[in-house]
Length: 267
Image (tube, rainbow, N blue to C red; front, side, top):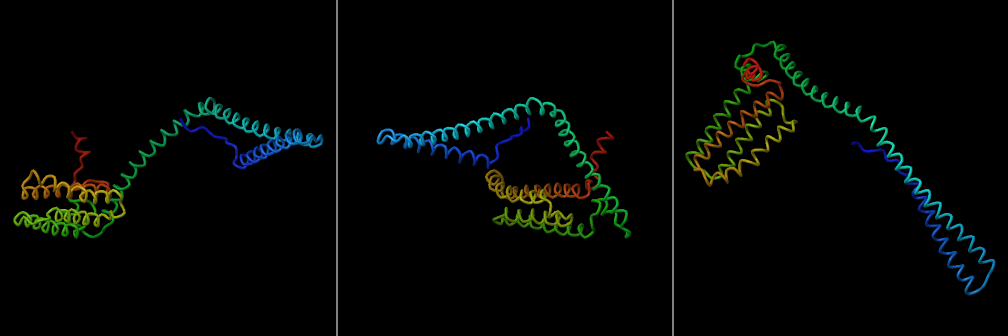
């Protein structure tokens, strides 16, 4: 249920009522004290009359201040009750429909964004006049030949690095493996311009959190060489998944012509 309207008294009126109530208390206290003096210590008729007048004024001010505050609270409760029992009950179906429509619009917007990326990818492929190698299109639409060369070069460096760690059993292997995770993330992010994407940075920090801890935990159960080989497989899986996500995020399609949706539809 939504919040009901609160027609609270303005702060200026509250301050005014508070000042009035303080003045009333001061008048009552002063008049009572003065009245006791005029009656007990010295019997002064004129002083007693003045004290009674001041006492009446103080009581009247206090009474009306408290009454005005009570009326304000009462009117607020009436307004809130009327809203709960009348206005909101009638508006509730409309508000529910608006919320449902908003949810449907968000889903539609997400679908339109995916379609827009796919259409933009097709347009980019069509408007390029220079001939393209089939291997580029087979990997992912919009992939450059330079990216393929960099990928091969980094794959050779990665394989050499892991083989070096296998045969030399060098210490701090987890830092070296973490470096390779970051290099692959950097290559893919640069190719698909994902440095402003929050999800891409989350994926970048995942190895930083998981690789060192996993090395320490699995090191108690697995031989160091097997552990290095295992993280080589983890790196390959990480690169494949991040590359697939990057292609889908920027191009609206999957790499290597993996149209899984169409495959299941044909089935």
